[in-house]
Image 1 (cartoon, rainbow, N blue to C red):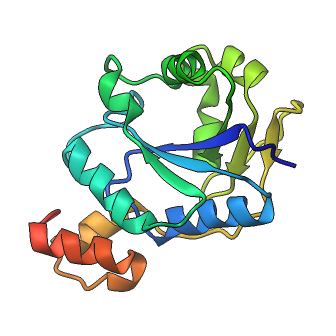
Image 2: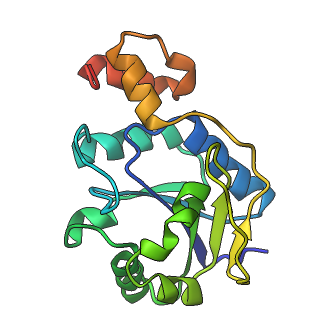
Length: 193
């Protein structure tokens, strides 16, 4: 059971945010009794290429459009102000200093769990933070003997931001993969063409 001072962090480039992100976030807040979830928009994931990454503020704005006043969701631009590349441990350390009464946990995909041992200071993260893991197609979630890792029995959504970017580039109508306001904004700004 989640306590009111605990905040679940959902890190991502959200390039763009899509229905899959929102379904997972909605599932965990409603079915795991999470009080507050922050979408942390990441400028640069050290384990990913940045080739077709939209500007930070454009991705942040799309998240704001997507969560549109849902009371349990917030968007955070905290990593825009931290040194690059962004390491989760640095962000967690900064957040703990800034919000000393809050307890931060993480929401990650099974693909991220598979590479978790490559994260900077992953042992410290694992020791000090609860990690919720949602399964993703194509990634095998290995079991950890650690009480801070919880594998979720959440719906598996086979949608990726890279699929959406590629579809938009190929002039496909993917309006139902995205929140309506996000889809309209992408068309208006001519993103991913």
